[in-house]
Length: 316
Ligand code: GDP
Image 1 (cartoon, rainbow, N blue to C red):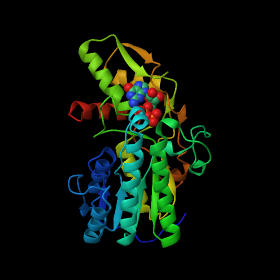
Image 2: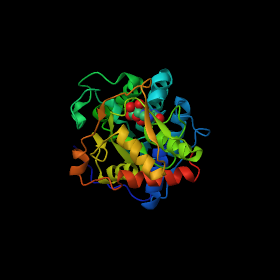
Image 3: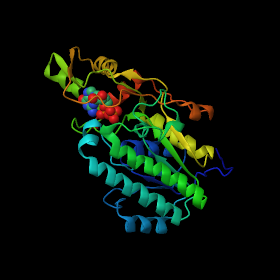
Image 4: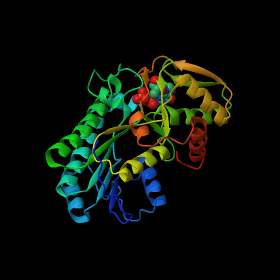
């Protein structure tokens, strides 16, 4: 693991790609809190990251010092499983364009964001960074995972061939402000918040949970993720792959129960076996980042309460 002594100054020009998304907006909040005032932010209407020429122009003109790639086509199990071409194509384009343009423009350092689904479906738990590419992927999100693995390999290869300093962070399942609460495309945690809220409002007696309820998942509050990203930027780390998570997981059944408690819905859980379970377990080993001194701060129940408040305030 290589580190550099150059700290990122508060005046650095920082491009947060995807700043309107859940992760990007959390990184912007964290950077502003940390006193970074020179943020380069472009909405999709101003800069289409799948357009190579536009991305090259943006980098040549704006010359960022540091880049966070939080832009991606993302979604839950159903969206990943059905919009397979979109997930593969858009993610490959975004990361190839941004990483290549960053190199051409001489960007100092870059943080690429991936996902825990890049690891083999049946790998030992908790998942260590070195398990990457040691076995077959989970089929429901294979296109997304392949794109994210390509992004990690772009960072690694540009570092090796061109001496760049690009780092990859692999978050576990994230949730929090600006999440997607659309039931057809969302991840499980925001979906359950919406379902429990609506079931309570309607006076229903049950809540439908997809699959068997047995899969185990780890959930990280997105502001903790943003904190880890800025921690990596400030640490001077200049290469490698870092898992980011809490270090513990819960079953989907337990998650549903906790969400119901927070929302205040007292009904029965019903499982819809026609929906897929996906990976049986996905718990990250967070030792590598832990050794550097970073730890998640927000507990699951506390985080769900914050997310529910955000949902009630209109993030839906
Ligand atoms: P994954 O982590 O890539 O599998 O993505 P998800 O967050 O979409 O799903 C995680 C697990 O939660 C899977 O086993 C889903 O079947 C289960 N799940 C239960 N209810 C829901 C729901 O309402 N929406 C979603 N997206 N998943 C659900």
